[in-house]
Amino acid sequence: MIELASTVPEVNVQPAEYTRLLGYPRGWTLEGRAAELADWARSWYAKNGRPWVYARQAESLEMADGFIEIDGVAFGSKRLQSVMERAEAHSVILVAVGAGPEAEEEAHRRWLEEKPDEYFFLEMFSSAVVEHLTTMTGANLCDWAERHDMAVLPHYSPGYPEWDISEQPRLLDLMKRTRKQALPSAIDVLESGMLRPKKTLLAVFGLTRHTDRLTRLTELIPCENCSFLPCQYRRTPYRRAPKLNGSERARIAVLDHEARYAVNTKALKRWAEERLSLRACEDGSIDALFRYDGTTCTNMGRPLTFHYTVKLGSRDEGYPIQAQSCAPATGDTGHMHMCQFLDDREALMSTIEREKPLAGQRLNAILSWQRPTCAAACYCEPASREHKWGLVLETIHYALVQRELQDTGTT
Image (cartoon, rainbow, N blue to C red; front, side, top):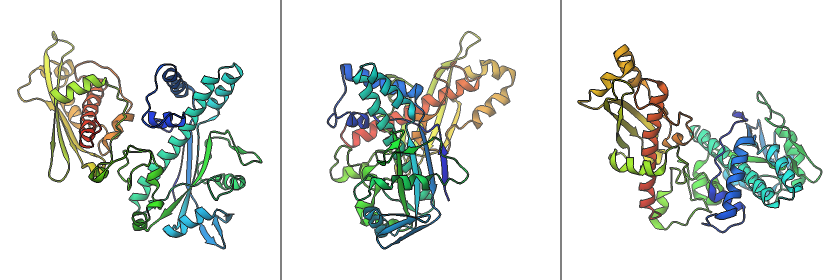
């Protein structure tokens, strides 16, 4: 019985989703004042926003006489009941997400200051945060369900078609019946059914063990409403994504094509061309070799070269990092002049050999890995070694994204 709560969820609102909420047409690029306001809203929220998520699996689910009962509480949504029955759902997961009250309060303050542009862009970014949190929670639930031979259905909320918003208070009361975790933030509901803070969403995700039904009944697949494009469990394209034709649908992205790298993309492009080699294996896995050239920080800056090897699982698996190693290139002698090597050769080299950051995770994890943004060129300190692994994995990610873009003809 899954239950999770977090006050520090990752917030990486995709520019395309934010632009859509701002009212611009698909593919529009913000410029000038609009771009400045969008960047301001994103930056303000990154510093001041307090997003949160909560999810728990219900104890019971019953459907009869035009009602669906969740833990003994009846709801009259015909649409929700129809979806649950057609998918033969056996349980539901109750989810609450919120952008926090801070952005709402700041937007109101900007309105009182007669700054409607700042008000609007911050309001819309908060809405984008709620959409993003719902999407990411759904993606996490998909991951959990897949490992338990289940599938997650599209989420549904009071106020959606055929679910009267007047049932929102009942759902909130049910949501507050937490187990070990508490709701991360206070929520109230007005008589109208509107939640306070208003940038909050309550939702119900169905669970089914009949995963084959989601393949046959496409309207039961949550993927069409899910903007998490890199998901390895995606069964059909996101309906707001660029249209694909024929065999291109089989090449739906499993890497974030709008990644925000810690490294300058010009450097990644140069390293991908000059330092990285990728080899596709018959089983779909990828062998990557990256050459790092640096210098020692002492002994007059002796040049050194290390080779990084990374084994990635197949694209269908989401490119999981299956194996990785770092060692001096054959014939390199510069590493022997590093101060830590001179102090304790075996300790340093065995440490370098053992370090395998993000092992077992999908390659997309590099985009959220917190690590030093700059460090010394040698390998003596952990920060220096983490920094270099970040360079290597981001270069591989960049190179594979460019390959996917080329394959789909979107470069």
